[in-house]
Length: 230
Length: 230
DNA sequence: AAAATAATTTAGTCATGGCTAAATTATTAG
DNA sequence: CTAATAATTTAGCCATGACTAAATTATTTT
Image 1 (tube, each protein chain N blue to C red):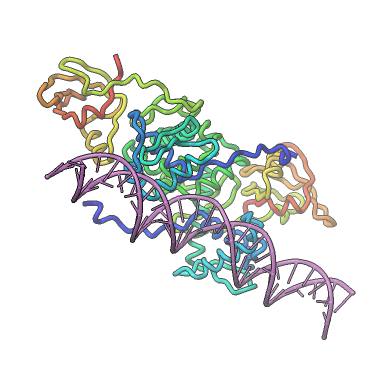
Image 2: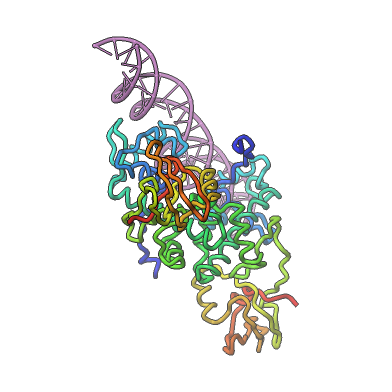
């Protein structure tokens, strides 16, 4: 009898579509449309394939992306919601794998990348609850809330700090796991206290003290480390 | 540099192939080849599709199934190994979801059904270790070992017991979750003590005492409940 | 502004894994 | 043993999502 009342759940976007939407979200966080080439690079796919998929996403009802030839692509509200769903899955999974299976935060990404596409809403709810509805994942990235909106980011980049200012590291946005491990070595991990002991106005290098050790960090690093806002 | 040394990991069988191999394993546990129709029913796919996939699996090098037209299909050693890998994933996942996320053993199946295809060896090892390398899953089914062999089953069906015999329930093989919940209601769950207080030689019904309650069970149920062997 | 280069799109192909309809082979009933 | 039925296979089609090669459009350089 329950059979007869089953909601005809709308089919979930395919794994490929989810990947496209997630990457488009990330590439458009700067406010600029994402280019075909950039997407192709991020997705490990040829540009021609990107064009094809984008055209398909733009033709869906409702459209998931806004697209004009040669103008790059952005997410529609529907597309953004779908992207945030995937990102929420990913970040909750990373948090959960680190907490319950002893993964380190720099090796958990790939696993989450595969799991994010197949977990149920029920599963998502259970791990969110088990983790106490965390605000950030192990990297410090904000986790989209259950209503599929991204919380306001109140962090500022470490590069904005000057001599004698200090704060707590919230987030480390490292593009590859090599750098991630390096920064972990230096003690530059989320929830660590950091203090700026010197600032060079010429190259914007910061001298920082973390866990009683001192390091000089260039803009390439300090711009990727986020500190709690004042 | 690590790049240059990356093992060219053989591509994992597709999700579809994994599903086929798992079902063939289950359907051939009785020693008989699996028929096209039975497989189609189990996989929610048309018989013609099964024929196509089986032919493909038989043509792989090494072959994953042994197949002769109209004769049904069995697993080759390579196919059996691949099937046991998926079954190990499934059963470890079920065990783990029940233990760590409070799933009940009758609602965990579908989730594991999707996750089993995407977890890494590393993940498998971590949950196996975290669970203390369990012998059976929450249903009581044997979990294939890390070397991908199925442990010897030392259980016997409840239907083999007679008046005044007793034992511990190891496994409940219920074909659908409705029956599963019903049996749970009756207290017929793995690791519970059960005592046969009467036996009817005519219809093979057993009168059993479980958790201070008494029930009369038909062969349709008693043959699906496994008890620790003597 | 024209030429060279880079980015993007189109057109056409392929593999995967479903499907239907029709043909074939097995099995069962009479 | 033959006819009816059931099971299985073949043939041909479709959607998805990749690919290459060629064409087109944008952007830089000179």
